Length: 317
Image (cartoon, rainbow, N blue to C red; front, top):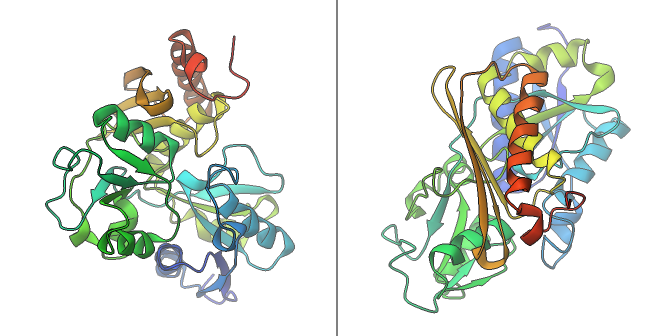
């Protein structure tokens, strides 16, 4: 394998995307000796303006990468799993989920002492996520939550410039690009579950390459526990028929074989919620087991009325 030609890894061009992709590239090279070079790909989400929710959610970032992979412009691509639609994509598959970064959301303000409770009434908080909008307003209905676009540094600059008083971001992204110092409050997952797959990376390849050199190389960087928990979260989101931008928080965490699972669906402004929680001791590596758990969780959420107050296409009863 060490004599194989370099692999081409497709990535968005943002600092966060290229940093994440380089981590994957370095891990593959360390495991196999195969050199990996990045191929930057521009996506609609990078060039179009407007609300991500109105554009179809963060899944807009994945389409161009997937098309480039199918065309043969690259040999593999890396996605932030939270941005990856849950529906199968013909001809492609997730071949590896490296060890997962922290899953939590954080609040970033003018300084590291910023907390949600300390913000003055009427303060402006930026986020492009309907889930985060609901979570912020559930806890602080007196705040203003406004849509925000741009990469991590653009959003942080808007806080420094006074356009926003604070923004909600993913802890994983900040830590990956060395922006730890801007983190104010870190939200606990038991009260603030995040997006399905948040903190995890998905390495996608062509299905035809699964049993070849590309598939074998990528499989070596897979972390089985990270993959199993993230894929369980995605199974719940898929069964809810909810997109990446849906007002749904799903988190699976734990140590060893014990997993604490939480799913929560939010109504507008967080006025209504329904929650399902599980302490799991099952083998989550089994797709059948994950699907069984996901079916039970979704049934509980729907029986609790989730489809009555949240936009969950196809789940009304």
